[in-house]
Length: 178
Image (cartoon, rainbow, N blue to C red):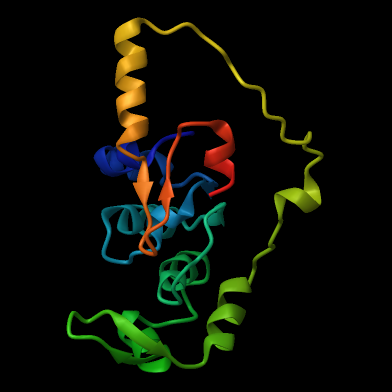
């Protein structure tokens, strides 16, 4: 079965009944969508994986930016590592801000080790024979109204950076050398 997170959530009960008694291996693509243990995506993947007693393969091209993002992945992949979110917090979060967001962490090496349990890290550049990236400009004719709009947008600047520099699109050279 190939399905989206939306279908998994909407048809959860039907899928759970269908999976019961079958040998299932679940592949979860874009597992960054399950890193928040409070999200519906996390709960649906966790529940269907546990209900089926299935092995699970998590795929992602998105790096884990914050240590707490690892919890959801670890909990799905190796649920025995942490009893619950409170245990993860007590072991790894040293302080939180006024909004309850983690500010400081402890024992990051253990998080990394737990994340890599039963895991293999594969980098595309190491495993795939990809062609070199090429740039090919595409030229097309614009109506006079479109040209005027484009020129106005270019003049109004595409982006002004905090240091006062401006990125504009007046020429290709300016886009690449700001």
